[in-house]
Image 1 (cartoon, protein in one colour):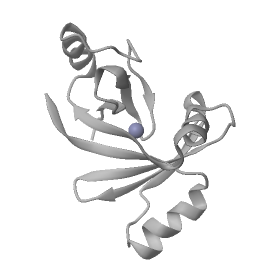
Image 2 (cartoon, protein in one colour):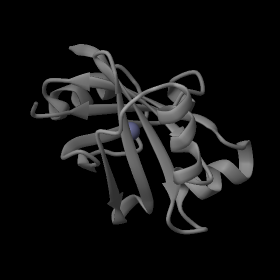
Image 3 (cartoon, helix red, strand yellow):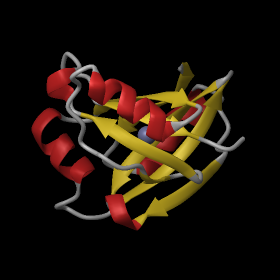
Image 4 (cartoon, helix red, strand yellow):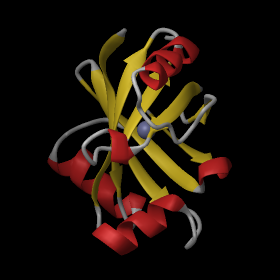
Length: 134
Ligand code: ZN
């Protein structure tokens, strides 16, 4: 059901600054950047092998990423697992007692359909399920 690590989401204060590390120092290439209004974030994707790094900068001081950084500082914010069928995956984990943040899939950067599981059910890790037509 879970295919691979789709991406790892990293909360950063300043996307432009953070990109310097990932491109100039680590030598990765930017696949694309996008603003997702719904989640109040600007994101950049950097492929690494078969997975990607997703850098997230808040576009709003009240947004979830801004609040995350306020509480815990910059760093790894979520782990995204690729699934074939997100509705089915959500139903399965729900049946197994996992608390969901998103009962229904919503739009995710890069034209994905995503849903978050509640970290209270997942040992403190914010897990995103990602369905991607690729
Ligand atoms: Zn993500």
